[in-house]
Amino acid sequence: MSRPIIGVTTSQRSGWRIFPLVALNIHLAGGRAVRWGVNRAPDLDAVHGIVIGGGDDISPDVYGGQLMASARLDPARDTLERALCCAAFEQNIPVLGICRGSQMLNVALGGDLHQDAFSVYENSRRYKTILPRRRVQVVEGTRLEGIAGKREMKVNALHSQSVARLGRGLEVAARDEGGMIQAIERVRDPFALGVQWHPEHLFYRKRQRAIFRALVHAAGAYRETRDQFAAVDRGMPVTG
Image (cartoon, rainbow, N blue to C red; front, side, top):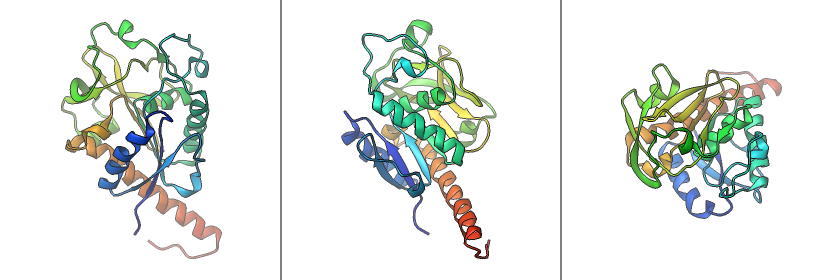
């Protein structure tokens, strides 16, 4: 069977260098990536899963926060990705959020953000590196634990914002040593996992590759279910 297709949103500024890395991780996990963006119209019927990528701050207008002078905004991308998240939840399409993408999952479900997370979590060390420096504790009993195990995880960190109030149907999947939320997930299907770090840079680590593998596996299951429903609509017998 062909590889599940994963739509990937990227920053207009940095997507040209980030998308190939995300696409590599998806390929290693058994999927095939297609790039989406403000100028690349998404087609949900053509994919089986979605990655909401990193880069750019989410405008506080989206969740009722206050604008900070240091924020790098892309309102058109905010609109696109929020709509994609909502549509994915409605259609049961699996979603992985990376850094900004994790924050967008939360905002799309009615949550909000700490714009200056390190002023709130003073015991969380500030890192700006793609190297695995931040220590993260995975919450017991979560989907993330099932994917990557319960041992402490060392991840990278490039963010200044973080999830504050959780959106509807979400739970915390990981925190750092200072208590800052580092991963969130939906408590029921469809598969929706958001990680505050960048696993695409950590493809040499088995537990990080497992995150992409979980998305591709969920996308394959979604494709199978969608194909079965399509066959029923056409009056064809369903096998398997």
